[in-house]
Image 1 (cartoon, rainbow, N blue to C red):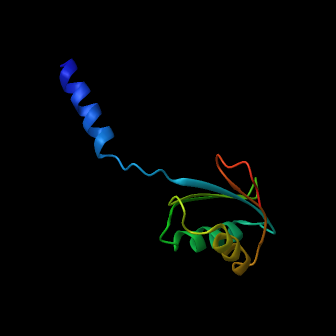
Image 2: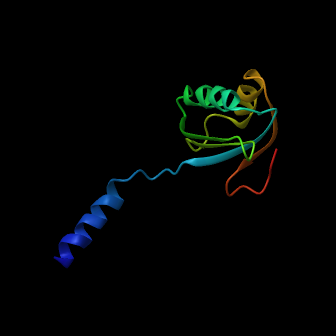
Image 3: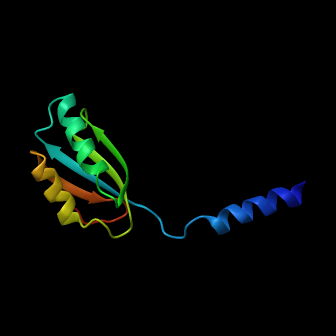
Length: 99
């Protein structure tokens, strides 16, 4: 039984992708209602390189899980601007620099 569990654990780790998702947080100015949240949610869900979107009205923040190097931080910023809001700060999890 113990060997079976170890084998399954090893197989799961071996099959899982080696690249990890990048987590990007964007502080947004101008988000005031549920329609704002919905608009930003739909904008980022359309991006193929974005795997998860979480928009918080309370924190005025967007949290994205993306592919390691795509989309660029500049294109994320541009998407926020085109949706009608102002990106205040963009932070990549584990990255000390913030834009």
